[in-house]
Image 1 (spheres, rainbow, N blue to C red):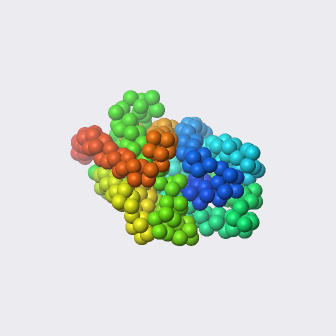
Image 2: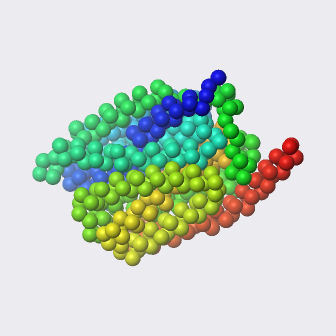
Image 3: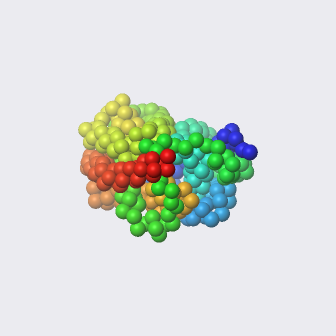
Length: 418
């Protein structure tokens, strides 16, 4: 019979994969050097993170479908290979072909990252079904922690292959791609699902913390439920502030009184707060409930956006960006657990894959409005961000009524069977 200890290796392996494929948050570090090295326009460079994020969300959907049908190992292998190939091909781009970055770095690596993300988050949830919030938090905090690990690595690589401020990105991206491929594929060897004996030995979560009714919904069944779309729209709006901030962190930090080295350090710091929000608030949601936790995170995000509107300088800017990163991190883990709560674990990869498309739409929608309708004006951009952060608060009050009904039914069922 398997023991709880048997969950350690597959869970840690999933976390290693997540760290490898979380590099999409590093675009703020690459953006300026790539613009200088390839004579790329700011408008073109700004859209990279949006396109990659959208491809990542599409990868979550297709990877979720593959994961539900063929399991996490095959899905993770496909994701690691796609991701590494995309980063590797980016190494061969020139000034004449730089626009192909939208295909290599954005589409291929974004899809690969999404495949691996879908496989790993579903796998860890299945190993820790009694702590779904914590399981999701561990997975997605590792994904965010990639920024902490690979920001200094990427900076060191760019410094090593730089001449007069112009970076030779061929060895930079080839080195990163090789590291991701080797580490990722080794980790996939230990990815597997738990056996029935292990699951039977686990403690049950308290009734007050459960939402799942005991039924697994297919995607079409889930999409007929209003709760599915409330979570989708909540994800669309709560991420707006962060997706607007990602391409701006380094350059905006320098205009707000930080040195270049300090601004780069802030990028790593956002990774810490992003990961912290994912891990801490996911665990908190197991106790306070998903809806209450989402409301707290929405308010925090609103506060961070207000600091930015008020032209926070120096330490104030750092505080605002870290609050926004923390506010973004929490929902990334909570929504995965939220979806499983309502619609069951069996088809969680597919169901959450569709909901994750909201993240891609969020990035495209808010960054397009900022770039083309607000002309990149920072103050007006963050006014829009602050407004978007409050929408999830209203949505969560709608979800609360449904959650209460399900919990009351669960309590009644337990009492009647006692």
